[in-house]
Amino acid sequence: MFEFLTPHQAILIVVIPLLASPICLIVRHSGIAWLIALVASWISFAIAINLLNQVTTVGPISYLLGNWPAPWGIEYKVDTLSAFVLLFISGISSITLIFARKSVYFEIAEDRIYLFYTMFLLAFAGLLGITITGDAFNLFVFLEISSLSSYVLISLGSSRNALTAAYRYLILGTVGATFYVIGVGLLYQMTGTLNIADLADRMPELSDTKTVLISLGFITVGIGLKLGLFPLHVWLPNAYAYAPSVVTAFLAATATKVAVYVLLRVYFTIFGYQIFNKLVIDELLLVLGLIAVISMSIVAIFQTNIKKLLAYSSVAQVGYMVIGISAVTVTGLTSTILHLFNHALIKGGLFLALAAIFLRIKSVKIDDMAGLGKLMPFTMAAFLMSGLSLIGVPLTVGFISKWYLILATLEKGWWPVAIIVLIGSLLSIVYVWKVIEIAYFRPVPDKSSKIKEAPLSMLIPIWILVTANYYFGIATDYTISSALSAAKELMGVAL
Amino acid sequence: MNLSFEIPGLINYWIVIIFMMIGLYIVISHGNLIKKIVGLNIFQVSVFVLYISISKIDGGSAPILDETIKSYSNPLPHVLILTAIVVGVATTSLGLALIVRIREAFGTVEEDDLLKSERLDD
Image (tube, each protein chain N blue to C red):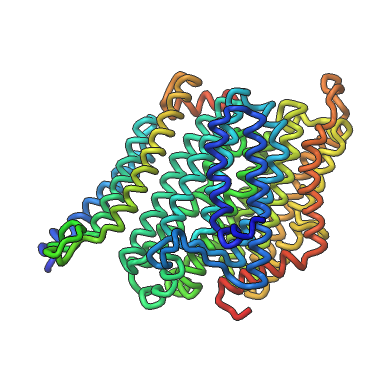
């Protein structure tokens, strides 16, 4: 019935949420807006599954916008890496949206809910666009679409601190995006093209020039701001802590991951890994990643606001991804790509469980969680199980990506790095345990004895993510083979 | 020293660098939220000038289809910058809208006072 649309999948995945967004704005009804968002997101998810299947069987897909040939027109390109990232962004968004109905109703004034879904779809479309586009400037446009809408989403948080958090993110996010534009401008000056594949073709003969190296520096700093790379992460904890719970879950699971994807694209597709011989960005990333893992895990231990605790833990987790990149080997990149996917599942599960807790106890302070293990057994069990995955206990997805990261470091002979990664995992035991201890081993205070379990419409999405945490931790073939072939593509190794 | 010859040719780039630094410095150093937005705008405009400078060709005319015009400036960066200007306008308006809300909620737009009130809320 819809066969005529099949060749246009690559554009439809972005255009459907992009067009659904103004429709939400027009209908001005909270329930219908939610339904539109949900349907648009699930359609994108279905297309993403289809695209990944097609890429693994047939090979990369190229879609020319308006049928203009590639270096002149904008090209959308789907290879294993982008199909993989599209899959988990749309998956997380679809699951979060099932959850969102009750949570958003509780946290946002009813006359603004349709605006919330408008912005959510824009952010979603932006993230998909960044992933799928094959044009360096088009990437900037989508980056700004997703950023501007996420500033709005963050500012919708119930406390007034959400406004200042959104403002600070706006300033730093815009500086970051502008740095990226400067980098792209310098590349255009040298090559005369903006198409990523075309840039990659022309790069080898230019990689000695200062302009190209400077543009690499600008892009690294710009995207570093977006992904919360230590020490450019200062906007992140407050933005995550004061945003509405659903937004935190969605952004934590997808936005920083997409920024890591951009970094991979720029380093390995445009510049090629040989660029690290000319500019020692890999060593810089290694050092920053290691500092992030240790310092941010320690900072997380001392937080009393659980949302902030998990936000700092996210910065530490970005550290692991960056260490994987800095190895510049197939194993290292595999660990980074696996961790993109796995961390989306982990943090999605944790933040959604936290959103359910917030719905019931109206707080995310650690002291208010006393006795929750008895009061909300299913939600807390989900939190505990995702927490185990965050630590990296065997049989969870967290274990798989850390295992590959340690393999990558040992392959390079960096045993001190491997030790620091293990210390980081030990520190994460401390901060996860802190929550578990209070929730399970403190008696139920009198005032909270009436608290009920979270509603089923929240428990189901949470448990889908928790189950995925264990399913992909045990049946690892699908994720590892996708990540491995994506890493091989990036390193230019024959499949 | 052929410096005296190089500076006029690269004057656009020198101006870009100076404005970029001024803009970035305002964003970092000023505590007033509106001034930060002003700084951000200066920073962004410097990038627009960078792009437009890249596209300029000595003696080139505007890119118009005409038999008398043999060399013309590259129009693509102009188009890109039109997009970037739109993005800049959106960012500025969103930033100012947030400032209005911040002023309503906190009664101030000074960073120092905001930090104090935020800590009290926490």
